[in-house]
Image 1 (spheres, helix red, strand yellow):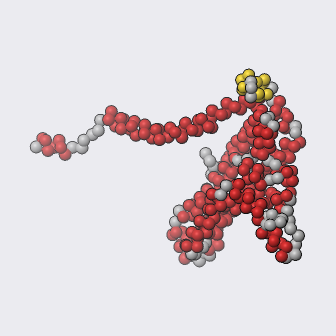
Image 2 (spheres, rainbow, N blue to C red):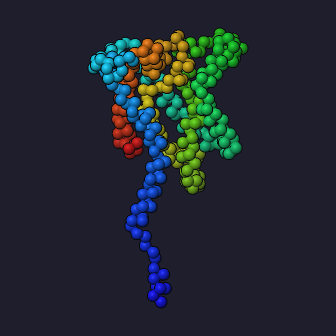
Image 3 (cartoon, rainbow, N blue to C red):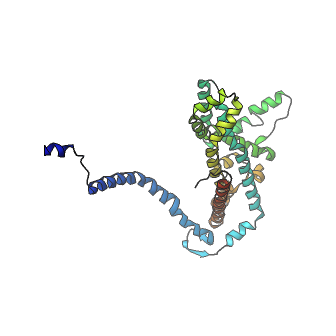
Length: 316
């Protein structure tokens, strides 16, 4: 009888045994995370040591430590350079266009695609919109140069049919920024809309049914149901986009620009490439990059605080 009573009692695990099991579980998780942590440290944190180049007249032959210390010499140089401020203005203007049109395009595309009744057509549209994202900027720039060519471009052929003169789109300063923004939208609108599609798919369908019973039109359902659910994701992506407002993207600008449109297309990344790599002014370009990173960091903190005060949402 005593043996039966003992068998019916639950077996309690020892504290030492539980701690060993927990330790093994954590050890396996840390082992999975270790390669990512090592790559992050090697490629993102160790190179921070190179910031010291901005305060020296760096020489490849002397090395970082043996190079002469010059303090804020390079910062003063580019801050007093009129050409740099033109480049800085181009960076902000192109980024503003990207933020105004390129950021809102995926939101609009997701809302419009969600209103399609045919599921097959909706999936086809989404798949087609994803495809340009997997093309490199080399291919995209080649497509635009081919279509907009004044001699053999398809677009200029249409203009000639209607009696207009061919337009040199890629060499026209007044049109080039618009082409840059359009190329960015065409390439990435579908891919950027994936997160919005995921949020829309997670909305409770009972909300739409209740709104329909109350007589709400599709337009009112979008305004009062779909968009409010998208606001947290929109705010998150907007803050992340603001953090990179001083970084337009090197590949797109470098591959699509030409000397005839440098005045409106030359940005910080292309300027750093020409001055830093082609002219070997490593200290100057490091100073520019450091200033760019600090401004982006400050902008992210300020915008995050404003977003939390206005909407209650933020990154942290």
